[in-house]
Length: 218
Image (cartoon, rainbow, N blue to C red; front, side, top):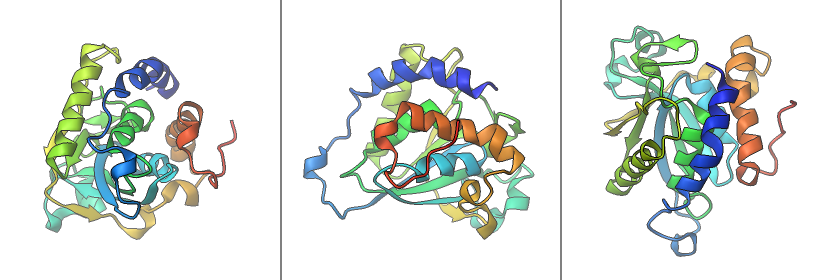
């Protein structure tokens, strides 16, 4: 998958559409210290977590598994593709600084390709599927509304296959998977598959990137 091409197709159109999908409460009405979580799946969690870790208002990102049972939430088992789990990230964020809508905007525009069914780039299997695990009715409505608008506007060249389901449970992955991008910047998989995502974030959403984040060399 040519990530740069995907980003180019999705960029401007997606940004225009998501303006109308503002969160129910304005930033001014959200308590400053109130934190919420979002759980998103979009292929290998290394790159997805790297993208969201760089956003203003995001205080923590955990790589893990969602969609299956606790007993099978282990990397080697999930990798068989038989557990029902998807590699996912749990994002803790301050809705006073960044909305759930904006997280989804980044998710669709740069974190992954929502048109790839049960795969993402070089990785194949249901564990790499595109899925939004909502934790509230508001999250469910926002996710479905965004998918509907993106579909109606034909933002992507193929149908969006992203699933939207209630979160049953999230289970953190092994320690070596956490913050993998920043700990292994020269790892070949990171360079070829995940670095383009971070570059796209910095180019398309510079206002969302944390001030203390070291920018990717292009």
